[in-house]
Image (cartoon, rainbow, N blue to C red; front, side, top):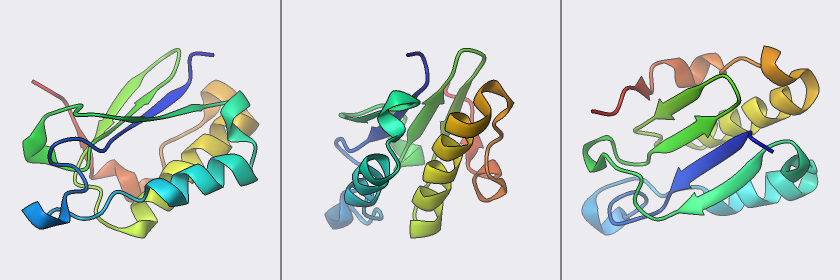
Length: 109
């Protein structure tokens, strides 16, 4: 399977003591289990993906694309990651990034 969602939970991401928002790991894991998403999109909670200045970073990887997202601070951002995975499960390569995540795209340097 080539569709993957990498969610950083490393040195900065999710570290509330550093002023960053919590990473909604349990929300994601529960949604993956409830919707049987693992067969369509592998969820990987990782150590540092960098860049730390973008904090709360995720990488959406498909056959056709790599989409980097940063500054995911709200529950709605993590719900949108679930929406994206559900869209992949239903429409495959035709899936689109939810609108709420568009402004969080970035290109790593």
